[in-house]
Image 1 (cartoon, rainbow, N blue to C red):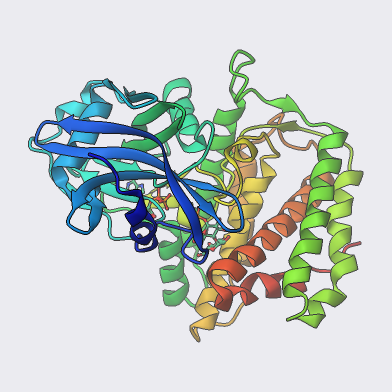
Image 2 (image 1 turned 180 degrees about the vertical axis):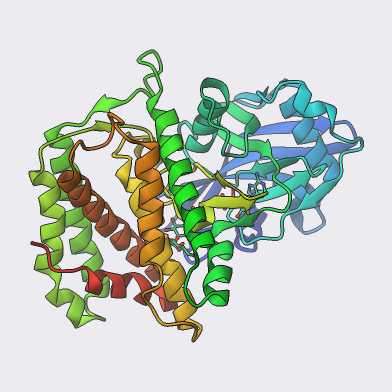
Length: 443
Ligand SMILES: Nc1ncnc2c1ncn2[C@@H]1O[C@H](COP(=O)(O)OP(=O)(O)O)[C@@H](O)[C@H]1O
Ligand SMILES: O=P(O)(O)O[C@H]1O[C@H](CO)[C@@H](O[C@H]2O[C@H](CO)[C@@H](O)[C@H](O)[C@H]2O)[C@H](O)[C@H]1O
């Protein structure tokens, strides 16, 4: 099948996962493509590069079939999805125009035994920038739409946890599909599907809506969540030097200086965007800068390790009374290289703590209970985290340094959130802005 390139800009603009809707497209070209003749399904798996009048080019994966007015999405066809999954689970390869599409199965044969045939396909009805489907209620396969150059952290971390550690508080990675060659990228991943799971965001909102004061049961769950995060960090830190992508590295003064300078820079950019709308925030600039600067002044203690990188309540699942941590993609706005960098584990801790504030603010905006209820959740979460990581070499050895670092990473996350909300949900920008205003004066 030859792709009619003239039709693609219009096609792309109508796809939910296409993030360039606001910009005029200059051109669309095909970087690589494979003709998929797989049993009852025939389609083209293409990687296209979109050039805009302004801004960076982007690459998208287009599994498409011919249609009278151009092309249509091949993932609407269950047979095509089954065919892609088969390629993955059989670890097969097939040639593309300038490379190869290769399946990888790491789940072991036992995870296949229980799969019914023909494999039932259920599409996930969530707002997503990718396309996920549940297969036989046992596997969830995610086809990546917007492709990044380099190693996908979601695949890399999932593979590390499944094959090199005993950490099981995560839906295990079962397999992946990679395109090798000119368009090198991981194009799909499959994980164990967790039935009847509720994500931590919804779970926490429900509790905040239903309980006037968060009871001991919820605090116990937050303690457990802190412990799971500590265990995840212990698993990351267990990597040996022969695994350079994961092995812990010493934390140097220059790391602290670099991170501190980056937060100061982000403060400048963020206040330029939002400060006009909120003069009170502009007035806090110097005090906020102090939080970031103190990070550069503490003595380096601990290590840099791989982290989750975008941890919040929406990245944990509650199922059968247990917490599972998932979605190791990292912050979507950063490059893969940046997302794979080792960092202080406290960055994840700060991410989750910010989420408690978001949950409470969301319920307050709905006209629910007043603020001030999540302080004990933060304390319980930190208590669980400290319990699981007692004596861990990757954390600062003294309490004061722990606090300075945690506050600096909370500030970093708050600034990221302001920018994220301005771009995606302007009505919500007041949540991180109000939290910035509340940050107590630094001493
Ligand atoms: N292993 C899983 N088991 C059950 N539900 C899952 C699983 N993985 C993801 N989900 C559900 O699918 C949604 C989207 O998954 P996610 O990996 O976050 O996709 P995306 O990266 O495109 O946002 C999640 O919010 C969660 O509700
Ligand atoms: O889940 P993603 O990897 O796409 O993360 C992005 O979107 C999140 C919102 O869905 C955003 O999280 C922010 O809002 C959450 C409530 O919706 C809140 O729990 C988080 O604490 C807050 O940071 C995340 O920052 C962004 O990267």
